[in-house]
Length: 309
Image 1 (cartoon, one colour):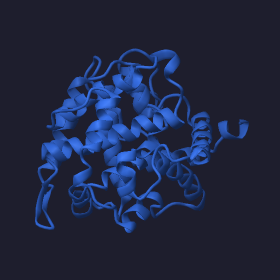
Image 2 (cartoon, one colour):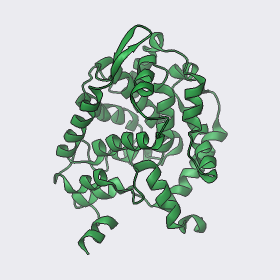
Image 3 (cartoon, one colour):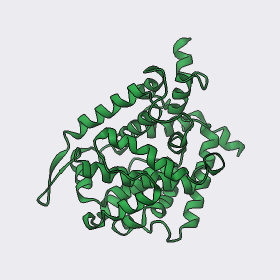
């Protein structure tokens, strides 16, 4: 493990650049988490939402979410026709990460500003596919994206993340589902589940609207372009676990095994990978570090100290 703790800074910077678009892990929108507003945001500091989204298991949850969300033809059309995910998948990843971490760790003022930004982007995403209209602002489609996201991130945290049960108890999945629903309501959807059981039922109800994910899309999500040989090996481990964690209601259309179909070995590999990465990167992400500083719960991040010097 000592080798991991001395991981070259160049490697850490490369990882941070992948997920945030900035080698420091702190682009302007992360720094705004520290600078905009003074109090808590939508979610309790060190609460369940903070712990789920502050965990590196989100790397696996993000892949599982994409696999599941793509099973809805209208959601898939929105991605394929209105984003540069094929030309620059990592830029799109950074954009999704921005909404996630700002909503989670930002002050109320910043979270509301970020939601307004995303709603504005959604207004431009509309069209027709096979005679059916779609709009990213449609409450039903927003609900679908939220449900698939919530299910995937919760499943990933439970499977490959830190054990939260000693601190938050067995009811933490229900707390996460109920509290994270606020982010979706702020984007314009309603009728959201408030427990893990309700979440499973809500996802299953979408089955008649789903269709098989194209092989090309599944291959793209599980093996995106532009990775170095080392990154490719690491990503393969994460994607292997993600394929085992997609909701059983979506797995058939996603073309992956999904939960409850074995896959213990793949999950164990990803868990070990993330444990090593956590040792290399530290306990808190740059986003959480920024939030903790804003709230007086932690020291100034490195970028803030450099700015003040």
